[in-house]
Amino acid sequence: MGLKEDFEEHAEKAKTLPENTTNENKLILYGLYKQATVGPVNTSRPGVFSQRERYKWDAWKAVEGKSKEEAMGDYITKVKQLQEEAAAATA
Image (cartoon, rainbow, N blue to C red; front, side):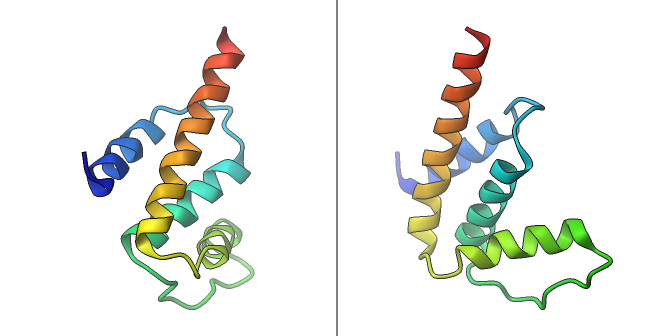
C-alpha cells in the first residue's frame, strides 16, 4: 500500500478515536492533516474572537516546514500512537 492510501486509511481511523482524546492531540492531527492535504498555510490567522479557528490555524502553522509526505508519515504515526494509548486504557 502506498503512503497516500495508508494516510487515507488512518484519516478514517482517526475519526474513531475516543471522545477523551485531548484537544492538544486533536490539534496535532489537524495540523498534520492540513499540511499533508493542502500544504503550507494559505490563509491569514483568524481574529482573537475566533479562538477555536485560531488554535487550528496555529497547529497547522506549527508544521509548515514539513513536506506533504513527511506530514502524512507523521500523521499515520500519531494516529497509531493514539490508538495504542486508547487500547491500553481500556485493557
